[in-house]
Image (cartoon, rainbow over all chains, first blue to last red; front, side):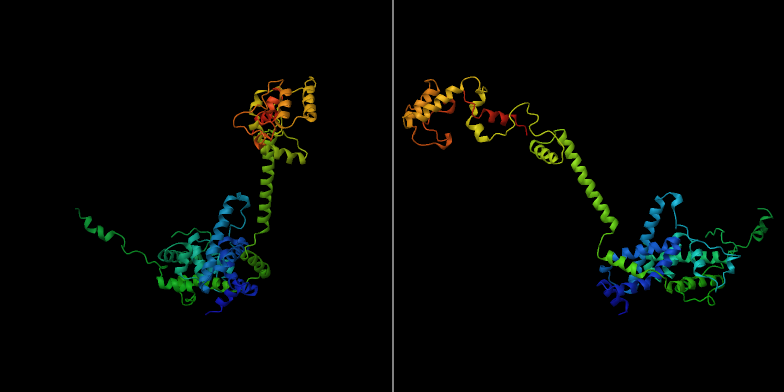
Length: 186
Length: 258
């Protein structure tokens, strides 16, 4: 039994320390995923995700990987609700919908391996189509396999494999383009 | 077919498609995404992609500062099912608005006198306590009695409804009643004879009280007629047709509109 399961049980029994430990373990991945999809609204969405998760935490049972998949399922639904709510707001009030794309000086090829920091990596991922960005972030940031990503996205595994293949190709093109604003078609 | 056709095949471009330098197999893609393919080992076109994946994976493992205590407290509240403050306030606002709406609706109906009789009475009393005057349940009885009748009274004096005339205290007929009362108190007669005397006086000699009727049991008080001595005589008879007993009640009963 991994150390996660007794920790989860303690959190379910009302142990705040165990709950805090779970939060510390999974929150960085959660915030990073949401930052890649919602930019500055990531912190608020992460808090909302945790609160939603806490409501049904007592009924959850499973491994650490199951918990991660469950948590990111809630995160993605929170994200969808966020976008729906934002779509109903007037245009000028839509804050946090645009992922910041930091200025890259010179060629994207200048993003040397060592210089590719998190911010720039997220900026590149955010230029992917939504479903491809979801697949990349869930695979890399959430650390989930194709099967669980397919469950979260409500797609077949084969469809997820196609999406991730296209996403990798597009990332390769984006990272090799001299101008970052060039539109990339498949 | 001309001689030029013989050279056409030679003039067409190379039918081989260009080499797709970005093509990778499924296993390589999986290894890239799993972080098992470091930049140095990745295909040249995917070295930066491998670096991107490594950067994201490294960032996912780094702690992010945050107010852990506040988040944990919020999570604990959510897990215990406590509603948020805004939810409680919203519920209280809705309940208050509902109660106010109900009072206004009832008040409006009561003010218009449109409620059923019993409800109108209750609403009138309640609103009177608040200083609001609304019509009572008998406000629309057009001058009829506003005291509710009892069904027993109406039943025993059903004939009285046909004699709407009521004795007038100023008409001088009250002396007739006083005479009868005086006789009733001072007569020496007993039993049936006393009843016959009083009844005869009251009816101007038309009463047949005291006359034995086959089957009658004059000495037995009958709860149905109030235990009146004399048995066969009725109040109507005793009053010489001027009795108003029950007429007001009957009117009241008729006047009452539910």
